[in-house]
Amino acid sequence: MKKQAIEHTRLLALSLLAGEDMYGYQMIVELARRSNHTFDMKEGTLYPVLHGLEQEGFVEAYRKQAPTGRERKYYHLTRKGEHALREEEAAWRRYSGAVNDVLRGGAEAV
Amino acid sequence: MKKQAIEHTRLLALSLLAGEDMYGYQMIVELARRSNHTFDMKEGTLYPVLHGLEQEGFVEAYRKQAPTGRERKYYHLTRKGEHALREEEAAWRRYSGAVNDVLRGGAEAV
DNA sequence: TGACATACCTAGCAACGCTATGTATAATAA
DNA sequence: TTATTATACATAGCGTTGCTAGGTATGTCA
Image (cartoon, rainbow over all chains, first blue to last red; front, side, top):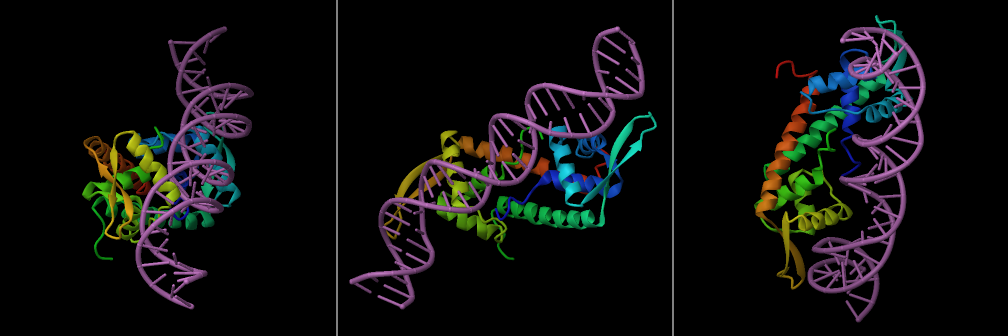
């Protein structure tokens, strides 16, 4: 499969941050809500991914006080991250389209 | 993610065998054709999966002489395999639908 | 005050798919 | 005729991904 393709966690994480800055815990809750609980992402999955995205410059982190007084770590999607998101989205459409083609018994014409 | 969900190799393999019995090498070529070369499955990926499917009773293997005189190992989808395919297809639709929901910014209503 | 939800983090493990390699035969090119 | 390529199957070993399991800490509520 070319290069393992999917990496759905990255796609989902980038996509969540496209609308607004979020903190990790919020992303997990939001993802569950938006996917009608199809995705129940674990902290052990998300946090390392966020750190990776930060290192690649796709997101930037900043700390902000919550109204509760508690400090949260928010993530913001950078230009580079927006670009990466568009690419991941395109890869997803290509991938899911190909799966659907195969399920239908194969696309006859191009 | 519940249980890693996708397992796309199994889904694709079962789906290929839904139409007709095939041998491994043929499945790889067919998959490339039907997916417009989005999927270029490796032998090191497919063969172990086929062996696994056979052990689970989802497929049955038999050897048959090719017109070239060469022997090939064909795989046939069993009843159990058809059932598994339907379940994997449903899981795929649920999964891909959820990804699309998240990409769209989240499904509002149920 | 104790329990729970919130909020972050990492080490270690398991599964999946790939690379690399091996074997063997048929077809084709040199 | 011989060498190369395509066909056809197989497995060992590795890397990536995501999960389990555990740890730390703070705010809320009974």
